[in-house]
Length: 339
Image (tube, rainbow, N blue to C red):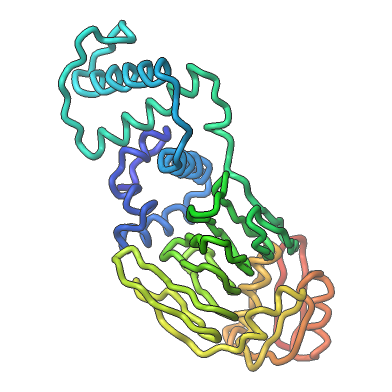
């Protein structure tokens, strides 16, 4: 685990990476989340590997017989190379060898043939990214998904959803950041599934907020009902008003004020004796700036009130107007001091 990865196939051949992607081992999920967070130079490679796995899972249209034959031949050729370490010159074997696939070899071969078939046929759509809604620092965006579901995406967040949604099939969405969903019911009551780093959220029609940022994952249900499905097979049903957070490989219900959790949709921050360090975390996530709390006691100071979160300058001026703090800004570094 965590060797030097230079190719997509390196990740696809790593059992721990597959356990992270399919969420079959909570420990591997946690370790990979930490590794990815600490290696930003590898994030693009990880995204490509995840896209390849998603494509392999997607149901594709039936392929012409000729294309299937060529794909099989290419797959057999790749497996033969992996077993013998020798490059065969023929694309099609007259008598394909009998092979036994190990788990690792199956993924390596499948990934290889995926890209080989794409190259052979120029099927750009296979490599095209799934539709997404993405926001930059300081941006909040609302959008309607193909099924009529309304989603609002918080700053520096991204949701990706599977293409070609059809009633009767699961509607799948992947969240990185924070988003609020108002899920539309379909005539056939198709499931709407939101994937996070630590669990899946399964619904048919409801309203809920989800945060999935690094090691921090939580859900607040406003309306309807949802089921949180863990990789270990455990489920937790939520009712309106519930707030559930992932903590040390388990789900934990907490008491929160819904107005505070959902205030970001109205470009506001609502605090009630909230430690200043919580505001610092929000500023970092929302605006991508470095915030320093000067003095150990500063982080334990609490704040109460309502502040705007659609303009960093106004937010800092509002904080400074409390007369409890002094704000010093130097480029992208902000220092908060006690008066």
